[in-house]
Length: 522
Image 1 (cartoon, rainbow, N blue to C red):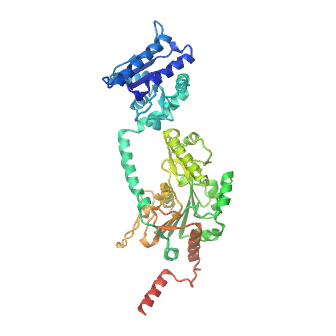
Image 2 (cartoon, rainbow, N blue to C red):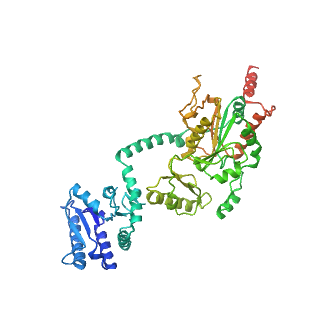
Image 3 (cartoon, one colour):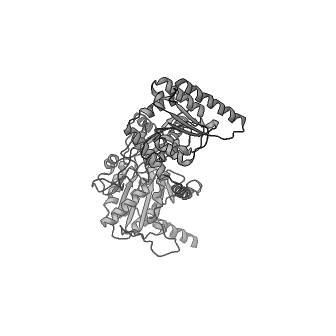
């Protein structure tokens, strides 16, 4: 066993020695088979408190060696000096267990150095929960509270008795983290997150959203030759449910998301139009989407776009390789499991209690359970979701566009886009995809988007691009609607435009403008 620390109060040297002593007391026979090599680099030797700490550590080392040592063996080898880095790396490489018991710490580079040098030996890392490294290496290490002497002693026994398969599995987790998260990678991610924060800034500081002009959207739809409709599901196309009824079903776990039955006719009309492409994107699973939309000629994107399907064909995944969903075993909570994600919804929990539990869960997921998994935590207004990294509804639309181009389903330039839904901030990239960039009003040249694997063109003017959020005040969308009832009104207007059945008694926006202009001239 190896310990490498500064001689400092926050490093927990006394707690480490007490735990090792307790381990030897409770496990007879190990005193001749295990050695703790403790390196304590001297620091602030002129400060009385540090001199006292040094005296206490020396006294404890002597006590343990006197109790369990022999003429030939000593349980503790204590080096009160700094060791050259080359020699330290050699010690890292041959050590079976590294013991870090910091009471308070920053990142703690020793834990990273130990993992990096253990590629062949597959040693075990016992790591204090108060070290910053626990947030990244926690899932592969044995995380302990150094103040709990019995717990640390038990962790030492567990580490020494650990089977080779478990040692290798834990080390593989941590080695992947250490080798992938280099300084260069950190700098690149920092810049990426900084840019991402700049994109998200308008969500909280932008001007109030305008209400979606439903009649104008229907007019522009009727005048277009090739349309793309991107629709969310929950709180967008769903039936209206009374709060009391929803609360009761949520508590018993029997909530079933259902398509608003009044929308079936309108959706069928829109989907049957060969000049209109309809896409429904949702975080819900394949079964839920099939049950509600299986009868329609549309694209379905389940679990935030992890699975796609067209017109009743077989589902296919958008993952480019073997999907790592081992994080699902790390999240042990009472929530809604899906095929590649997990969602915990506390919308109808008591406010204060639900918020406290959510904060605890977020801290636990980030620090330990998911610290080295290919997963990310997405927080909603009253929900927490764990999903694979990089899975968003915007990426799902990108994949569908690729499929449309590959299959040559769309042959004319898309000149109308409606994107509407009650999306989380993480999924609002659906409003800002490159292919939906709108040309400035001052430019008349058509916007065209092409890629090597697709040939879908967009001739999209500003007045024919409608991005709309539902039930939110802050969004990257241009417009908003208050709820699902207004969405239903919008879709009925679009369907009426498809059937040529718009109510002529209701003046259009252009007719209103002409009327107002005539009134002013009179």
